[in-house]
Image (cartoon, rainbow, N blue to C red; front, side, top):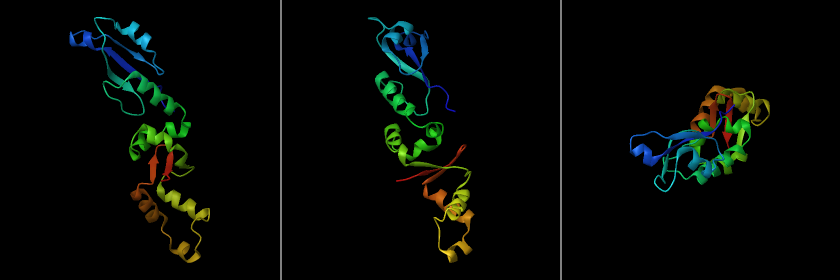
Length: 163
């Protein structure tokens, strides 16, 4: 299960003066709450992201609105995809691309390796030629599936990324 998403936001003016003033916030982040909790005002207007626990990367100056938007997209993903986002995200151009293609990500239930996927393909008749089946090397075919980059082995099983 994915851990809660949260972001550490610091008062940049205070930080530059040598004082660490910041707090952890869980999305959706309310900017008025940020201002109140870390002391943003007319004198200290700027903030920076100094740490985060998210299934994707953000920058030090990522706008709060953008963080909220991306977190909302991630929250809408099925649990089995969200829980494996760390292993799968690098196959996409970013969080938005990943979320847009979530329906194209298939979990091969009960498969721990791509060799298991090859065996399941045989069992389900996805490879049907009898001569081919007799000489079929599931481990080798599974290795080839893995090398092509369309199958990703994760802690929860094997995912197929349909492109």
